Amino acid sequence: MKDIHAKLMERLAHDAGLFKKEENAILGAEFNTASVSQNPVMMQQWVDNTKFKIDIANNDDRKIIEAVIDSHIEFEKIHPFSDGNGRTGRMIMNFLLLQNNNFPLIIKGEDRTRYLGFLAKEDVKTFSNFASELIEFEKDRSLRFASKEANRIEL
Image (cartoon, rainbow, N blue to C red; front, top):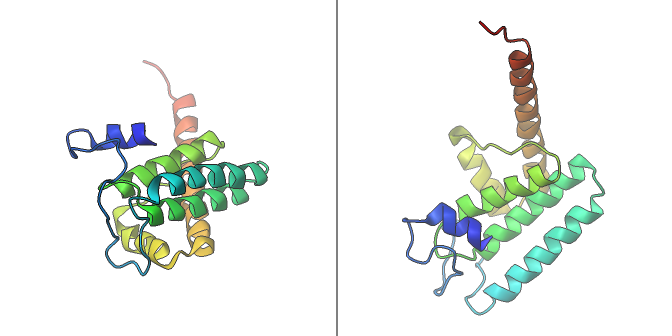
């Protein structure tokens, strides 16, 4: 995850790829992020918990999506980097979905407020249902595109 952060924040942050060295917060959230001293331990727990949640989902797409969404919310609550936590968290979320044979979760600009509401309320169930709909849309869109390409006539 540090490598993902480093690549996403290259030329945008002086501490790209490094855990935060100062306290931070999420504007509008009702919870505190991890302290600098808690951060490394909480991130190791996050990695272990994420792996466990996905393992017990036992290849059930709905359970995997819920596990990934739950882990995404936990990642954002920890807020391990000084900046770029949102984009890094979403990239990791999509990596986990793809790694577990799901399509990515594309959150459009018009859904940003709703997405932030799910995070602020730590609403795993509603966010998972919302995510499942968007992932299904991406799956259908991808299959339509693949079908279109398969039926394309070369000139």
